[in-house]
Length: 119
Image (cartoon, rainbow, N blue to C red; front, side, top):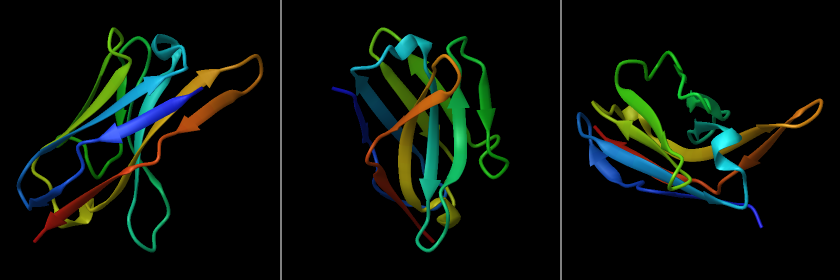
C-alpha cells in the first residue's frame, strides 16, 4: 500500500522557520522525484519545490532563497526546510511522489499538513 505522510505543519510567526517531513512507504523512493506543493484557501495548488533522484533541486519563484528541499533515501523521507516565513506562505502543504512508468509519470499525493504564518 502506498502511503505518503506529511508532518511538521504548525502555526508560526512571520520570520520564523518550520521543517516539514514526508515519510513514504510502498514506493521505490529512490527512483521517485519528490516534490512539495501548497494550496492556500481559495487558490489553486502551486508548486513549491522538487528534488530528483540525483538530488537536483528546483524551486518556485516565491520560495527561492528561503526554502530548502532535501531527501534521505535511507529513511524514504523528503524534507522541506522553510525559513523567513511570510503570511503568504500559509496553506496546506502536500508531498508528491513522481515515478516514471513506460510512457507516463505516476504521481502519488499525501494528505497534507497545515502551515499557518501569522503576521
